Length: 133
Image (cartoon, rainbow, N blue to C red; front, side, top):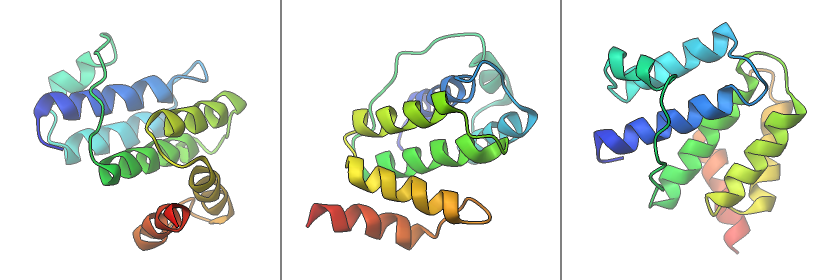
């Protein structure tokens, strides 16, 4: 991710996804805060994202889209409750990102089966690579 605006767009997408079930859980906010910090987003800009709508900037590289999809999937599991709206939305977001629907399903299944809801980065990439063959 190159520009500050792209980072803000990515975070805005995550915030919109976090409230898809109608509320923002404390764990979701904490996760978003950690991501904002990692992306070096100013605290004031982070807080403003909850009150303004940004035009999304599409991610160009597949690795960035995979990484964003995984962040969204982690966010979905943050509050410990998997809402039907979240599950539908994440699949649609993944497809809209141009990711393979079969890989999306496999990633979500692997995360569901993991006790921590996390999967190794190599496994994540390999699942998407396998779908290219």
